[in-house]
Length: 144
Image 1: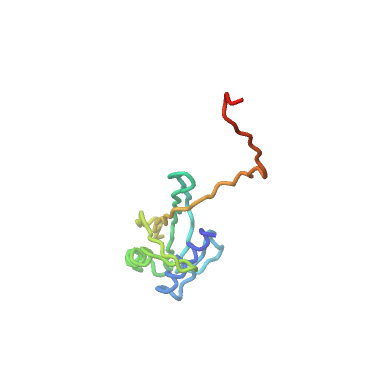
Image 2 (image 1 turned 45 degrees about the vertical axis):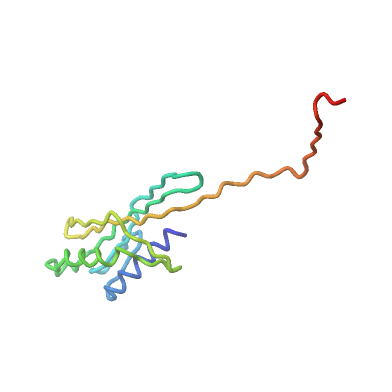
């Protein structure tokens, strides 16, 4: 599944830079240990381009919760690292994906890093069944 592959790619690259931090996907765990990251998909957008070709965008909010005892920790430094780390991710199959619409905001001492990953997908139409046999008679009009 494409969504899971993107989340795994994000997880892998964040873990490479912050190996000691927990990374949670989609749900906030009660009693989570700070500092940590949460990867949450916000929205899926799709637009038909031509025929069977579609443009799909996955929007994410990657939240960084700093250690509550060290609130003075450099939240913006983490945002700066995420800006570089998440520009390109590699999915488990080895596909490269470029992050777009990248921006960050801090709310209630939590960093929200917003990013989207875009791709073209092809959705083949269901093929109609063909007739097994076609009989055709032909002739020239007016010839006897």
